[in-house]
Length: 110
Image 1 (spheres, helix red, strand yellow):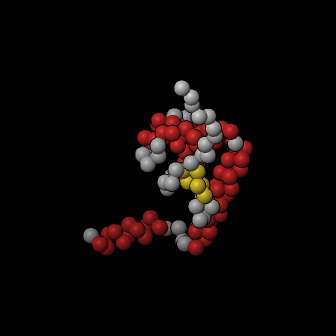
Image 2 (cartoon, helix red, strand yellow):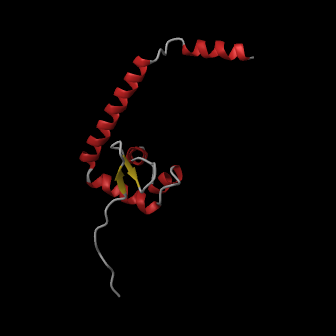
Image 3 (cartoon, helix red, strand yellow):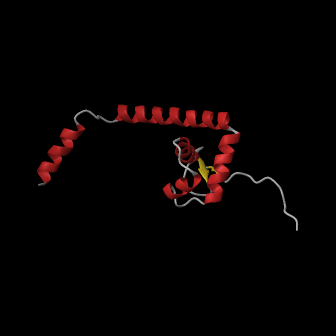
């Protein structure tokens, strides 16, 4: 009996926005790595993200562990991008007094 030994590419895809997604799903590499870094096992990650398969999660974890510095740089750039977008959104909309405006609108509807 023989077994084929070879390498298998990780189930990661770069979408049109430059976001790395796992196994053809909408789940991001960020989500899997964050869950793993917070102590979740591969099985727990599959429970959190049911569209993922267990072999894919193990492959992503192995990819992350083998290329931690590279993946962390990618995650840092994603965090920086999110912070820029958040700041931009905050400057475009007035967040001050939003709760009061919503409560006043709600009272008018009652």
